[in-house]
Amino acid sequence: MRQKRHWQKLAVCLALIALTCVSARGADDATDGFVPLFNGQDLSGWVPINVAPSTFSVRDGIIVSTGIPTGLMRTQRQYENFIIELEWRHMKPGGNAGLFVWGDGLPACGTPFARGMEVQILDNGFNAQGKNEWYTTHGDVFPVMGSKMTPTGRISSTGQRSFPLEERSKSSPEWNHYRLEASDGVLRLSVNGKEVTVGKDASPRKGFLCLESEGSECHFRNIRIRELPSTNPSPDEIADPAEGFVPLYTGVDLSNWRADAGHEGHWQPSDWKLSYDGKSEAADKNLWSEKEFGDFVLVCDWRWTRKPEPKPLPVVLPSGDQAVDEAGQPKTEVVPDAGDSGVYLRGNSKSQVNMWCWPVGSGEVYGYRTDSSQPAEVRAGVTPKKNADKPIGQWNRFIITMKGDRLTVNLNGETVIENAQLPGVPSRGPIALQHHGDPIEFANIFVKEL
Image (cartoon, rainbow, N blue to C red; front, side):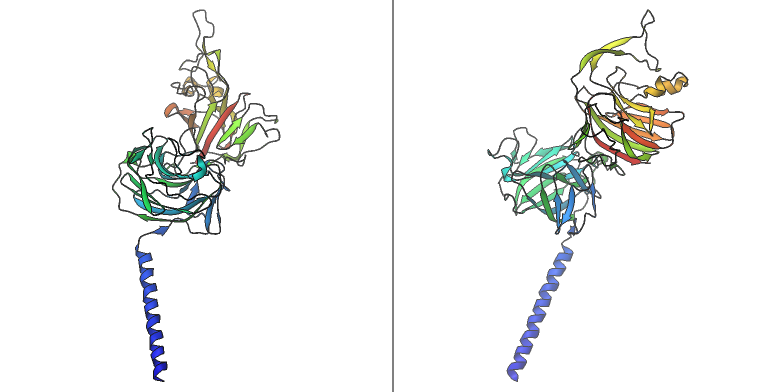
């Protein structure tokens, strides 16, 4: 009986010890400050920037990226100072992806990437011939799309990238662990348990965290974050939130657009770009949005793809009238010409924001400018204040704002049309990318309803 009581006491002691250990471990987990950024079940807390709904999904507690199209999914809110931990693996040798830090809410003009810092996620087989001056297998830290960072340690020959001091990544399909400390503009990356890369003086230093899709399947899991005290960034050190914008182009198909018979093979999804060859066979060759819009802000990138040719094109005066020479003949100027297109607003071809190569520049509203029945102030208002177009072949960005019957057009950071009145413009209607028989590429098409 005494021996039985001894074993009973021993069992109670062991149970108390086990309970104490579990409680202590639970307390540590609760007080280490980390919270999950991924709940293991769905993509709550994440927002696609410029990718299809199918690009990122959840399977067996893992975020799965198809890699198609090239683009980003961001956190729902911005972060400043923090430690983030995550695991990643590529499912194909040579796979490419990334973790973007302190990123903007929209991609930069003519690119699928947001301004910010990128922490490279590459598989060892990315460069089968060995490392080159630009890429290592993993762990590069570098600024992208106009952001700034001072690289340290092992630096690329371009002077732009911090390379890891030691190669520590495991090849596909093994898992790798990243721990990134980001504080006061300094980034410190540890790969599989050891710090290997440091960058400093980053700007912006507050913004979104993004997972990158870039061409092949990549998996992410166990994403968690611990926020650190603020170091009070100035307004110009905070990324652009670009809140409220939703993509109209998915990068994989013509979802959100009326894919009329005859468009196929002409209005062609091409990864993050939407290519048009100018040869649609549809009855209405313009590409119309499925949804109608009232007041909105539209972002749209575009560029000419045809080789330019010299062509005499009309000279337009600030009044909206065409200039004439001493003999009273319409004045022209020989300029490189690569095409003509535009954006129809509210289902109406008259309220078209032009894309073309005329000397007056893109952004004008041809249907109102050339309507002699319109008041002089209306015709002058829809005439660009300046030519803000990039050279042919480079990307341009329109930011078009419609409020009531008033239009403002920003082209490449310049306001070329400001609060111009469009009398009689419909109150609602779809948006269209115009067919004018010329090849053109579009990208980064976003709309925010007001």
